[in-house]
Length: 258
Image (cartoon, rainbow, N blue to C red; front, side, top):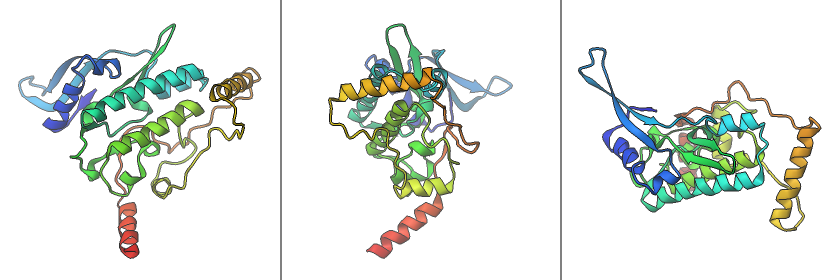
């Protein structure tokens, strides 16, 4: 993992990955390298973490590998581990700022699936963020960020909510849409809501999980479970989340409302 951060963000990342408590929920690092020029004399501004290799890859790779067929017990365990990592960051006054499936690495062991949060290079103090330099994946980005507001702890919680949706649905969010200005506008207006379970039955939650899981695996056996095709303009790599059109519209709307 290579960074070109300012010193404070880089040091935050180092510190957050150095404690024993954090290593339970974050990817441990084996060391830090500084890239040098061709002459090997002058260090560049590129820093690199040397990290453990995870065969199962990130959450997207794991969903593709399992065809979205995740057991509810595994889903709950993964959600628990991710939430514990986010809680640690927030309790220590930090936000991640770029949570999405590509920043969650999976380790599938015989008895349990471990989930680790990575890419802390963009994390930093919760009260010092530049709203014009926010990177992320559009479906996981808080609508308030798209409107020009700086990321907050609530932004991490929003991203975590979309991660839970991803795990429950077994597909990438909004994978059938182009990740463009139009979609960003819809998200900023709160016009996209996808129901995962519309069962009105008020039975015990665990019973609903069992019923849903039974149907999911039954559909797989009958070859009725179809993976959704990913739109060629759907982008799940981090990129600049800066849409001046949305920001200008929001400012005009607020001004008119006042």
